[in-house]
Length: 264
Image (cartoon, rainbow, N blue to C red; front, top):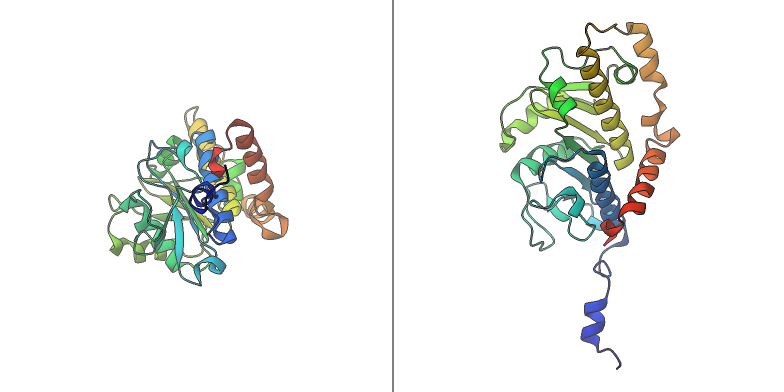
């Protein structure tokens, strides 16, 4: 039987009417949610990774994509990501709600930092543990040395649902892309999603090593001049050297071998 126009429309890809640049961003972000799940960086249905919709697809408006509140990271797909503005208003008629604690912090960063194309936030055990230490991340390991003078701190003000916290957060962040939210968790932002991932992975890894080291005793500090050199030589954050694209692509390939449904 020849399909009717109605059945053809029903069978058409969900992204057929979407700008290709937005769809590409959706697929990349959905893949990242699956990578977080693979790494165990999930917090039930909480926490967020947000990505700006390319200006070519948004007409220059500040729109960004966020996970549907209520779905586990393993359930996030390109088509069920929610598009919102900086006020948290849903723009794509999504049936899913948005967690207020997600868009308040993320929107402040996307709006206040022109280069913050992507923002990631986690509550990993190691990240929260180091965030609860009085001295925070210490210069004691290979990974923390790469973050010398790259880490910002923001004091805990409670559950992040109040927009008036935004200016203080931005003041504390400055231009540093790795952020420790005291008593709370880790955050990173970057010019691309892979760069943001590389920054967050390094920060979280530094926290893991610090937690393991402190459980055994006193840590041996990295000399200041060595840490400065390490931070300068950390090429994984540099756009001229891929800015994390290679490691992100490797993890996407791993996700593809397990479950490629994030592309739906």
